[in-house]
Image (cartoon, rainbow over all chains, first blue to last red; front, side, top):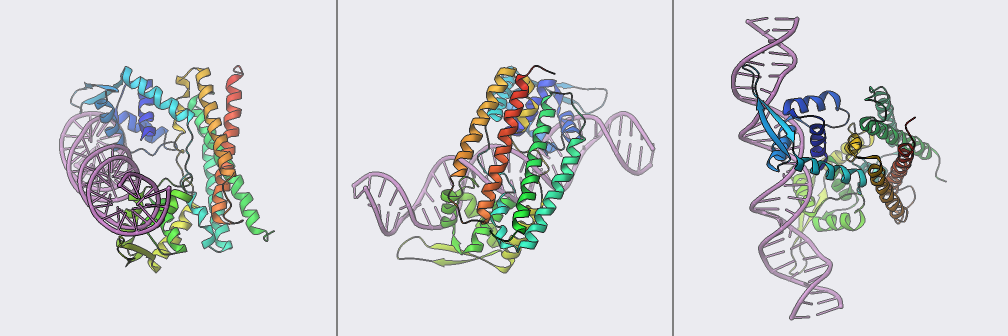
Length: 173
Length: 173
DNA sequence: TATAACATGTAACAAGTTACATGATTTC
DNA sequence: GAAATCATGTAACTTGTTACATGTTATA
């Protein structure tokens, strides 16, 4: 929740926007970062407005449906800063989702387990390829930083998987 | 959701249990793995029963509240296997929560940003220490594997953070 | 005798997703 | 004239959490 709120607030820090615009930006540019859905964006904006974090003004061009333009307020900026500091300084203290599977890997026979992990490796490599060709947002930019972080973690994941597969192949020492 | 269901099914694969028992095991032994709450455990068991994945028998000792003992069914075992294969072979394709912050790091001044990341590093190191002293569940066990994976990822995260902090300290090249 | 542990559960709430509904405008 | 894009929103549903409610038994 905090995460999605931070994302919306962050986008509003750059400029005032309407819901459609925010949703479109996330869908088109941040598809690899967030899977936030349209309805969620709208409801977060409503929530932020109720909390006094954003102001709304209505704009209309001709006969088109009116746009609800959201502008971040000082309260909202403070909230943004708090959330930003909190997420930058904290660390998840629970296993990432997807790791639960490792706990029960003994329920599969060795060959199948290895085959499944190899599929995971393949997906990691595909993702790495995609991420490495993502257009730069300008060197030293936060967006680039977040992508670099993602790449580093996936590489580590892949290497660990490869190493683990090797160990599984070797007879128990 | 799939994750929590897999966890409950996995625990029932070992032995039939009642809700309290499952919840207690998660709280006492898997606190670093899952943050699933009591009410959630009970409702997942109910859900699994409705889906035909588990059977219930009632047991009572003296005047104590009766225990609902849940036993995994063949359907449940199949479901377990499916979920297990799916999580072992798939890879999250969205940025891990916590990474959104990096996108907006430019909104802070350099010194503060560095200080926050250093806090994150410290938490990573504390967590690594805790995880390295976690009692072994037996070598080559899935549980150990999942902890080793966790350790590898956190180490990578820490190293990346340290490297990034260094780069932030250096004048732009 | 108080309180922790045992054992269950429900009700209210919060957050998100899916799917639907509306209607104008641009493009093919 | 059909389909995509623009722009908003709501209703129903799922998942999960918090907080409450209940009563027994062992322990300090």
